[in-house]
Amino acid sequence: MTSTFKFLAVTPDLRRLEALRSLLGGAGGKGEAIAALPLSDDTRLPDCAALFMDADAAPEGQALRRCRELRSHLHAASFAIILFGSGRGGAALVEGLDAGADDFWQYPFKDSVCLAYLRAILRRLSRLRPQERSVLSGTLSLDPSSRTATLGGKELVLRSKEFDLLYYLLQHQGTVVRRDALLQAVWDYPEAIPTRTVDFHVSQLRRKLGRAGKNLETVTGMGYRFRADQDQA
Amino acid sequence: MNAETIIVVDDEEDFVDILRQMLEPAGYRVVAAANGEEGLAVMRREAPSLMILDVNMPLMGGYEVCREVRADPRFFELPILMLTIRNRDEEIVRGLEKGADDYLTKPFDRQVLLAKIRRLLKRVR
Image (cartoon, rainbow over all chains, first blue to last red; front, side):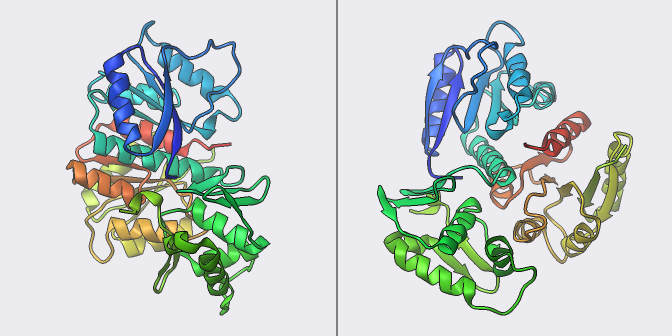
């Protein structure tokens, strides 16, 4: 998961809102809370990475309906939807998942477990649509549409393959990517061939990244990993 | 209908049979493997749409399977549902951090399993 993400929480219950805020804030979430989502004839989609909706909010069933409406939009799959509420047992979860939610959280929340699920959901979503989005880690940000990279607010000058390599590693932040996978994804090499190309570009990137370069780790015998920002002490 | 293939990686044969009886009537094709190593081989051969993965297995356990799947460019998008007896909070957190997309503890509710599978199989545009 990237170090910060936007969320939108929809609940009329202030205690639940506060619980969500502290849970998500601890994970780098920056968000806003509203009492109700825009009406369904509003075709705008929420601009956030994760949308939280209170399943118990009146009128009954509204959160599920809204969830279905949102998922019926063409691009609505690009953000996570998490329902929460007092529902016990599997029924609320099954209902929520079938309406298009990614999870149902029982309130009161188990923070550590909820966060782990949220990270897994955001990670899966970013795997599924890898092309369009900017990726970031700490103060490092890469925008594929403008092909610009910034570090600590300043533009980072990267050569084309350096950009592609760093972008790919950031997309898979926290996981080890094999050398042959990198050769295939960045250089279009059909199969593993002995070459120092990846290693050379990695060392160039480390130099350009300065202090942030230490996040670009070599995993002996496997490949490389861009360490997720939250792993830093 | 084009049945989606689900790979079940679990060393308990009886449990694999139970899963088969749950999944096949729901229209899925089930292939199975008894440990992580075999699981990776079967995955590469069968190209499944989803993996149901146990944690404790001989030869190669679930965490290592997760890492191998994610490091393979052909399969790094494969949804992984960890299905295990390990139900402590820190074990759930660990499984999800190791690369599982979802987690379910044994014993489980059949409807919950099927709903999770349906959700994980939804393609994102």
